[in-house]
Length: 207
Image 1: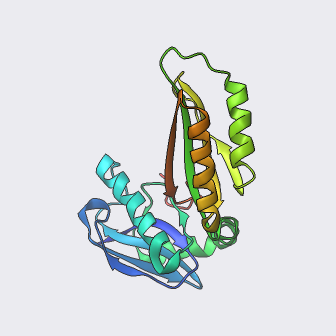
Image 2: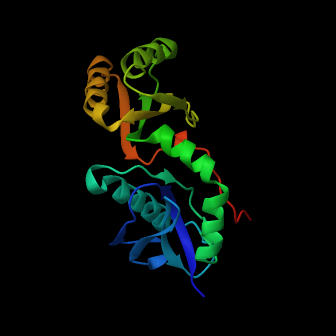
């Protein structure tokens, strides 16, 4: 029996395309229940192992959906959501419908961008002043932002920003200004990603 591996949930028209999917699959499609569609591929387990390769494929499938038709909105699921049948998956879509609608509303037309600011080894920097300068440049452009772990003592700042697609260029320009201003710091700018940091919907089949 084949299970369904879920990448994310959207309210747009169904999609179907060939790509490198999780667990060696190459066909991505949607399972729909009333105006909500789960983007899935087939898988032979409900407990997939998270390899680097599959984690990357999970993100790339989401990015491919986001890039379709001029930009689609998808609520991303964390790696590892798999269901035994379409029926089980539709029950989940039915049960979590209000939460998905809210999440879709929050991220409609928006992308996630990541900014890390790293100081050179041994450099003495005023972290607070840098945080204020970054906030002055980026917060007016972003719809929301959240802090992430400072997992290294050289990280001065690590934040995710939720940005309207149409404001992406303004955000790029603000990043370029920060890079010019702080030539003794390394600015790591990543994305666009599906807005993981700005949705908090977990769905059934929890182990």
